[in-house]
Amino acid sequence: MNAPLDLDVKPVSRYPVPALADLPDDVRMRIVAVQEKAGFVPNVFVALAHRPAEFRAFFAYHDALMDKETGSLTKADREMIVTATSARNRCLYCVVAHGALVRVYSKNPLLADQVAVNHRKADLDERQKAMLDFAIKVCLASDTVGEADHALLHEHGFDDEDIWDIAAITAFFGLSNRVANVAGMRPNDEFYLMGRVPRRK
Image (cartoon, rainbow, N blue to C red):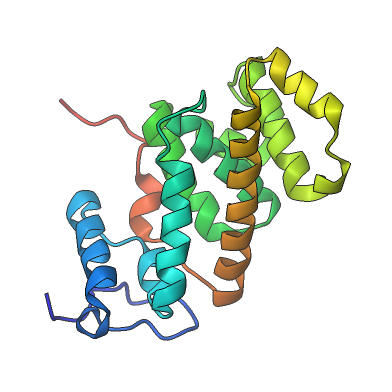
């Protein structure tokens, strides 16, 4: 538990990455739990551990948005929002990491690449396309969102709380995209192949 994290040879971030033993107990425990579940530590955890107070705030809001069990958005929907908007913000880390989760949750090895490049051409239904149209509008031109946008989403079965979720996920990951880009955060190699080939039974 007190050994330094086993990081890739290439730097995770342009900022210092603290040793696991030097972290506050709650931050260290969160990282160890993620490692036990995923089999590796996503680089965002060690990069943000550089500033423990912000680490706690970031993951508290992340969990509130992405682990929410109410509303009509599925886990795949939420990850598609992150992937589509992160692509517009040119955030390599989030496109690669959350694209992997799109593949896992959707059980579709092709979908993440489609969503990142052009969700209008992706293998999505009209509901999902409307959701991502709105997310990208929030990402790029939130000042133009109006009643017509809400009405269109209502027609596709989203309620007002779902619309808040779409906007909040987009906004939160807009913050994440910018921090990741400035820090030069590198996606873990494990993400690139995750969900691309079905697991053997």
